[in-house]
Image (cartoon, rainbow, N blue to C red; front, side, top):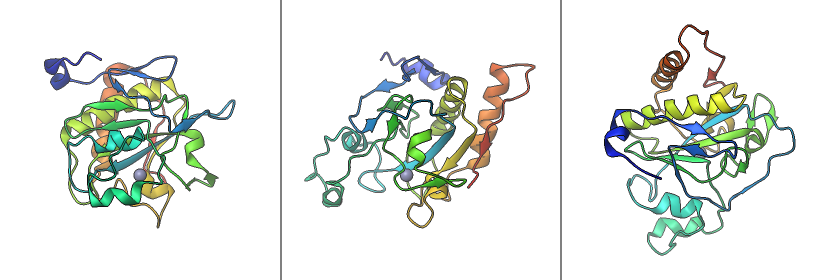
Length: 211
Ligand SMILES: [Zn+2]
């Protein structure tokens, strides 16, 4: 992918191609996915946070984990990650750069045991977005800008109805994106972009933070 620094600073814009890959993101295909069941409505967006090692930003380790290429000796924390075969569809780094690991058409292994409004196995019908971050500090403005733009692109390409957090679909087991994730700021940014992209049109429904 071509990364133009000036453009990157001004604004994000993504488009999901027919194969489920975002034009405007860096593509790093992960093996940690399988096909969705025929006819699945991709209705849910799941927000996560991750940092590796926990609390440290900027390293290669999240992408390495999602690609099954993590050097388990690089940090004592990594030993417990050996059995994991996981990947979100997307990762948004602290500077707003967006990496994509799995086609949004496919089922990425990001949510694990989970339930949304009584529907189990959220991986089946969701798209997972990781923000590089923790439960203990604010996310970067550039991450919200990228997230809002990516959400708009995904809403345009898929019949998304809801955005929720991993903590909401796996309560007691997961805590991300956590108390520092600004749900109302995210929603406001999304609605603004949505309005700019479709002036004069009523916004299609996308409900945020339902449990
Ligand atoms: Zn998560």
